Length: 415
Image (cartoon, rainbow, N blue to C red; front, side, top):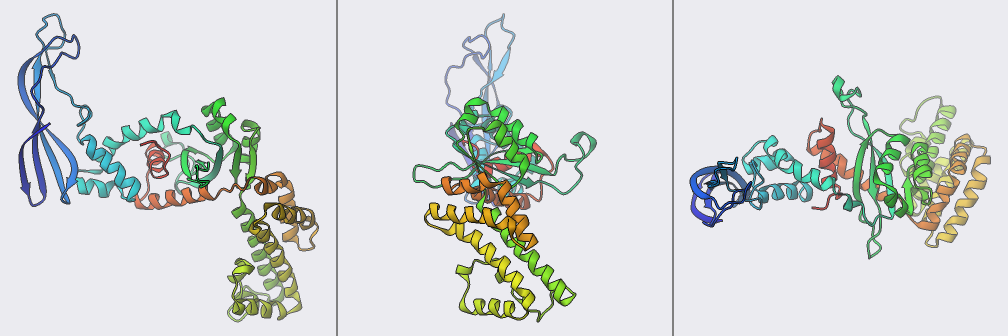
């Protein structure tokens, strides 16, 4: 393309371009065509000097010389410049995608920089994203698969054809495979409606036997629906219960015991000055992270009343869970975890006994962490990115648009 004119205005940069003159063949019959006329096409290009850029493309029109050809005239096409009937240049579309993915920009913010409307930007980049999402090669080389639920919206769950948005919860699949340096580069693979065994199983079935056979480890939160799908579709994979959620269950038990003892001993919820209420936050921390002052506060609170001994015991049990995952030697951590599974179910504290029964039910997936070292942490990180961009976008009402947007920022597309 040749630049024939440039005009700079305060709010706009206009560049006139045209292609080099060369023979053109009819797209239907291939006969060498003759020049017919010119037509100016207005295109939006990537910004320059913080100014929106417009390209005035003086396109060439040709006439086919073959009388038997059904095409009489046609206009030149330059796919590297712009897709047929496109309003944004290929460069502008790629720039918009990079801004959304790398700079956490909103589509509306990108549209403002280009000097166009939201719909113009999205209609230009959506085909690119959709084509990348349909590319099955992006699933190649995966060996560790993570899964987690994600809340999409809080409005009507009726079917879209009935005026709703469908299921408010989505199931997200994340690639947790380590790279050549042993680092996990989590990337979102897909989002499907629903939080159920059916949602996860359906997605795995679509991927095919070659994909499922390559999955060696499948991480998950303690949700039986996902576990059943893994057992059915990923029979050769090792299911691993996420360490974060196991520790969170232990911390939740401590909080439940603290509130119960608080209510039983004082007859009311925690108030300022109550010993147990004053340590509610630091009870959630690991013992290894506490300062001497914080340790002293905990000891004073536990010694304030004899009934507080129950809270002390629950806290020690939760710290055992943390200690199992903190061990540098995974074999030592597994020994602690096995003692937990054996002892917690018989604990006299109801909340700890319930946790023990849960861990006993999930024993294989719980202990599998100490053999694989895999966690669902990368999946939670992707969820954080999704939440960020949902706020940036002020919500997205169309599921397919939402899915493509999140696949882009989650690194799931080969672009």
